[in-house]
Length: 187
Image (tube, rainbow, N blue to C red; front, side, top):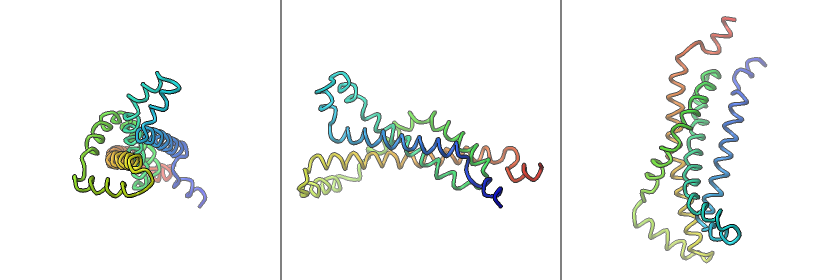
């Protein structure tokens, strides 16, 4: 029974790697989204003008890249739950991670463009009016919420792509070779 539990658990190195990469994407996403929403490069330029100018030019791409990477990684991690064979799960996650790295830049631009599609002008006007009535600094809060929604829309679109990448990788590698149950039965 104990050997049964060990074969059903995912490989620790793959789970650890996906977990750390997801944490890194969240960290970069939170920092760059907050920086973009609160116009932090102006404060950075006071102490370090060169870095502040560079960050002002690139913070949006860090935000888009982190949102896309987060969505891809979460999609791969969720996709792993649909595969029962631990060997196919590990191989599929490895291949999906490589495919995600290759597709990150094109997906970043695609998901960012699609996330910029607004819900409609009535919603945007209503959002501005609702936030304006909050006496907690309407404009900065409006920018934070708008930027946060954009981040999560981009991550959600990339999440679908991450699931699709894992599905392709799992289908390709599930049919090849023997499953782990067949390998243990043969030994």
